[in-house]
Length: 328
Image (cartoon, rainbow, N blue to C red; front, side):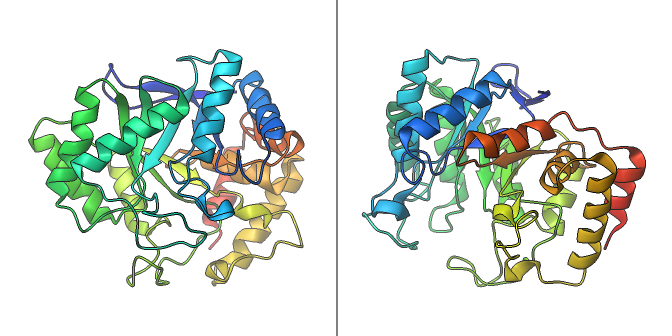
């Protein structure tokens, strides 16, 4: 396993593995015994960066979420896990009432809600401090100043370390970070978005945004990250739910664009050259890319996890990277 440091402040920065494990389905569709086995193997292999959210996975059983955090809390206690493992969670997307469908009726990003939700997550995870806390989705209902100050307050309390954001427009990220900097407050340092080797369309409307999908890395996001190397990109769903390697998992419509076929050809060629799977090449490309990302992978079995773990130590040559980068 390889590692990198995220965050600039010596008091909050963390050294984490270059491969993060997603716990979204742990405690719901992935049962407790299997979840524990996956977590144990990940840590045994040197993994130190686990990701969840306070609304995972409400849609499975019609709840408000929390099942994933609660399972991680039980696992932490049963294994004696401490500060050596970084657990990231998110708030802002928890539904206001039990539901099985995605809805606009979710908790806000007011200072009061940030404090209450962070406390609930700490209780679920069984920890006094959240290592990394994200604003899960943007909240245009609340002034950014209040949200910025609300996150800074829980950091000042010592109950939260690093701050991050996902599913935000670039201008809202920049404005929030500028407000924090002007006030001498901690701001977002980790960005979590859907990012992979194949590029997804960003102009398709979603439930929350008629202007396009806020969860997908756009050219603006990549340019923003390139300009500020201190920011860290965590790339969720990097393996496209199995579409790179399984014929029964066709690509989603958002990937049906002019560059897809060319990039798939390059990917197949590099996989053949390395003897690695397409999934492993994608993960290695992300980890060592021009804008290095931390892939966030899910797993429903230990065997599935093993394939991703092997990618952490896969070295692509300059020629192979050039071939992948040049495909359009």
